[in-house]
Image (cartoon, rainbow, N blue to C red; front, side):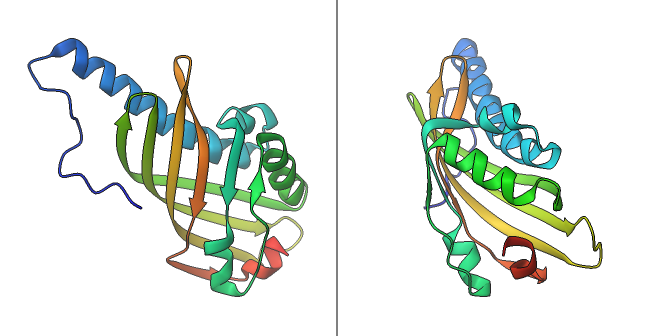
Length: 168
């Protein structure tokens, strides 16, 4: 489920071109998750959409189950973008911090594990918030020179605040 390799790069150190190509892929893979987080935080539809493949899936059910919610599996880039931005725009401010990325590349597919801390504040009541610490399990595909998310599974390690008030 999570990327647990004992080293970051697979390209031999003496093969400079292979190392550079792998480093580029790893930066682009990580950037897909950065676009996901910043796109939400800025409510930037184009940036947020750029993180996903057309046939992407977003599974927030493992995280939501921790506070008793049962959201549906979101399928398709347009559905994901519309659903999440509509849920937050004008109602919730968010900040996402992404750390501990671990990546496994296999040709034109990749897996990314990361830890994401997401703060959510109701715009009309800053005292109502939800701070989530979530492990992400991400499958990605190459899309030209960049990478996009095909499947994103979000779990939750801990939270504070009132996620039910934020997510409904």
